[in-house]
Image (cartoon, rainbow, N blue to C red):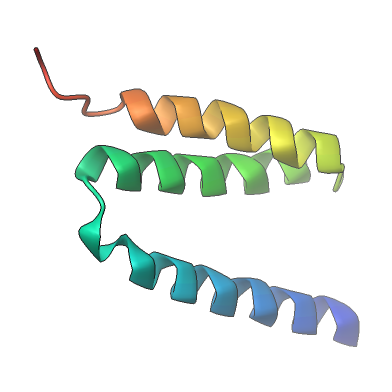
Length: 73
């Protein structure tokens, strides 16, 4: 149980540091990053912790995040 708590805290700290780098990103870039993060977590949860599920979820989430609120041409 202790290892899971450490891993969760490390993941949160990494996410916080990573989001600090988003200040110069466009809104579409931010949506892509957020979508990829949410997709990775969801893919991992839905596949029981599978790495393939996490990667697949990140790809799908990134694509969806990129297309949300896309600038009109």
